[in-house]
Amino acid sequence: MKDDIIVTKDLCKTYVLGKITVPALKPTSISIKRGDYISIVGPSGSGKSTFMNLLGCLDTPTSGNLIIEGTDVSKLNENQLAKIRREKIGFIFQKYNLIPTLNAIDNVALSMSFVGINLKTRLKRAEELLGLVDLSKRISHKPSELSGGEQQRVAIARALSNKPSIILADEPTGNVDTKSGDKIMNILEDINSQGETIIIVTHDLDIAKRANRNLYIHDGEVVEAAY
Image (cartoon, rainbow, N blue to C red):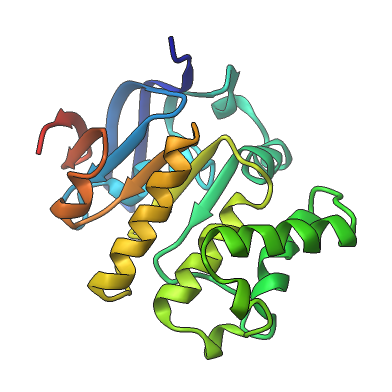
């Protein structure tokens, strides 16, 4: 039986803008199992990004609890949250966020330096990961020399570099063509089949339908959905 990797208990985020209170995420209680493949869908402004940022420890809740692998991260300070992000969460962003002056292998290897892995090991693992995403022949190319789909595959390799427990992907196919998008999704699904927990935010229902479980957000409320 799969264990819970993420649990939220009345997780809530409210923004105060002058005299106006905006409930970006209403109290949400869900559990995500290790190895789940989840899509999060909702219109613009619905709270998807807020929810993703909370799950990724990029933001802190106004109230409620977020428990990752048994640790209540809603009670941690910024240094402790940074450690959780480094060691437990791999991020894939819509705009790739690669460093333009570094080639593919150095972009992937860089994040490993923050957890104290030596250079030789970093480069070896980065090369293996780029092979996993079918970029063995592009490891010396900088982002400007890669297509959008190739850049996103470098970003996937980077997200895997520190062997995270959870992969959070924000519109991973949003900036690529259909063929590249399908290749990216196939890679993520292969990773999930090996036991990795994948959570994807998307506007694309065809992408959402590929997940094993779907969450829908509207006006800050998270509900289970079926597509």
